[in-house]
Image (cartoon, rainbow, N blue to C red; front, side, top):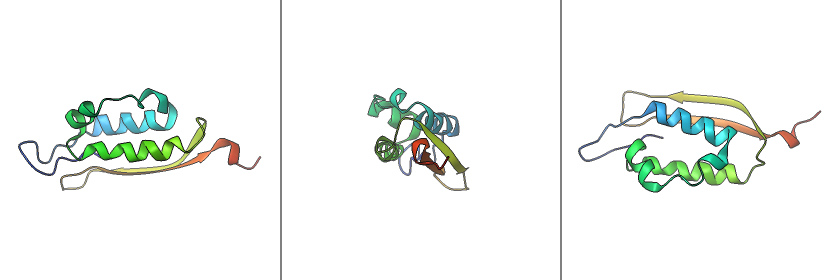
Length: 94
């Protein structure tokens, strides 16, 4: 998620931005769809823009989803990684 692997900001990890972005991606994806690329670069580092791929995946789902599982970890390295498991609420058995 937050990744700045080279340059003056190498090692940048913005956990607050990452977790807020994940919350919005799950619960209000329309709120993050127009985020400028420069904001991703500023807040999450040059490789942090890869979360756009998460947003593309999210776009393939219904707006109404349930987050079944989330794991987030900031190891002793230059990245913050996360995992989230989403299900369309319409696909859940009643």
